[in-house]
Image (cartoon, rainbow, N blue to C red; front, side):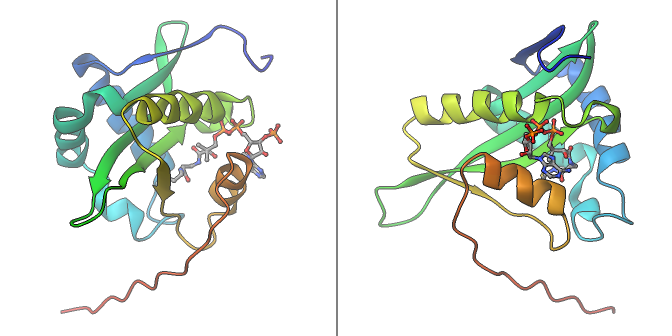
Length: 153
Ligand SMILES: CC(C)(COP(=O)(O)OP(=O)(O)OC[C@H]1O[C@@H](n2cnc3c(N)ncnc32)[C@H](O)[C@@H]1OP(=O)(O)O)[C@@H](O)C(=O)NCCC(=O)NCCS
């Protein structure tokens, strides 16, 4: 498959949600993303889709969804800035490195910029080098460390 072949980028619809959920289950596995996996569930997707449908976009090939991005906006109290937050971005593994993640990201960034966003945020689990490299390529350049702590009860 060449980089741009047959792939269309379009709004996510309600009918896409089960497929998006299953692609996420394949990608965000507990082995690769022990923390991320816990929040990938149908409620998360349904709630993001309800509040931020305009920032939910899919990539389609031969009428099948093969990738998606879901983003939201964050406003801080006493700040004029609104942030765009890429909550989930995923492409089916067999289609990686064909420019699909980039097309999805660019589309959601364009929409967020039109909505007045001037700064983008994403969080990436340590060791997820493909995503780190990807977002660096997309122009993200400020890294701040954030430490997750867990406690088993
Ligand atoms: C991150 C992800 C969405 C990238 O999707 P993709 O369609 O493969 O990315 P693209 O083909 O558009 O890559 C664009 C650029 O990002 C960089 N990149 C992407 N994957 C990379 C990898 N595995 N190693 C190094 N660089 C990579 C490259 O610079 C690439 O450009 P190039 O292929 O011309 O060198 C995909 O790897 C994925 O689904 N990962 C699992 C889920 C995840 O971690 N999501 C992010 C956090 S929510």
